[in-house]
Image (cartoon, rainbow, N blue to C red; front, side, top):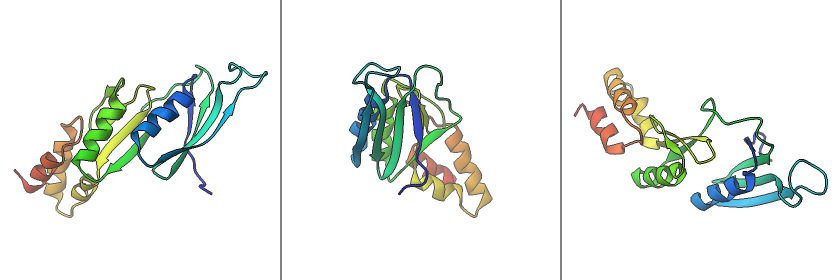
Amino acid sequence: MQKIIPFLWFNNQAEEAMNFYRSIFKNSKVLNVSRWGDTGPGPKGSAMVASFELEGQKFLALNGGPEFKFTEAISLLVNCENQDEVDYLWEKLSEGGQPGRCGWLKDKFSLSWQIVPQVFWELASDKDPEKKKRVMQAMMQMTKFDIEKLKKAAAGM
């Protein structure tokens, strides 16, 4: 049993969002969709709560109405193995959304994501304070992460 599960509140797009995320992440699956019956605020037969898994992480998505909106105060961070993965996820998740700075973006549902290459964490935690500073300065200039630029900054180029 997973102890902590992100619970995502949507107006009425929980099932659409689940299917969108599943189309992007290869290792994903629907766990369950509970639907509104005769009683409840949602149209009969529409999704009430959808549970799904992306890359081994479980999520719950609720069609809770327009009362609450996503903010950048919370985001989903995706550690990427290489530039191809960064590029793929950036393109897919930002489609219909809004790119941000430093690897952040909002998807078309306004959920915030951070698409970060694993090498960034390695470079940004280097023991050399000057190297770390150059990497952080390079990152602060980026929208989508660029691994080669990070490595060049680390090398002082």
